[in-house]
Image (tube, rainbow, N blue to C red; front, side, top):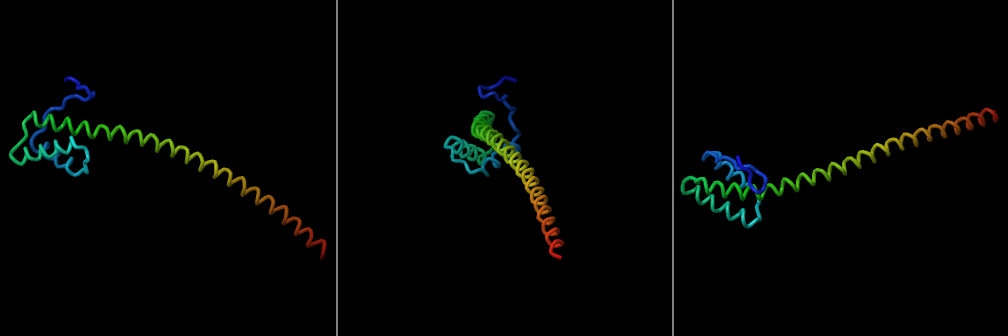
Length: 126
């Protein structure tokens, strides 16, 4: 199979049922891109009149691939960013938990000293 300029392999044409399902699935998305909107309307008209030939399927699939492949790249970049930020948050959480442990031990130690003073002062009075 030959590769297209976008790096994707040409996919075999879908049977009518699978192709119609793809068209319906794409129609569920809110699309603002003029090119894809035009292809969507065009293919819906073709399918309403019968079935799409190979050329119509190829044109439609190419438009869908162009539109959605950009979102995949964008989503992967966003995921990398979120993962990096989560890693930072986890490190901050770990550091704060460790710091909290140190502070709790310090409170316990200082309270112990103050209790000894109180206990000693109480017995000296009495």
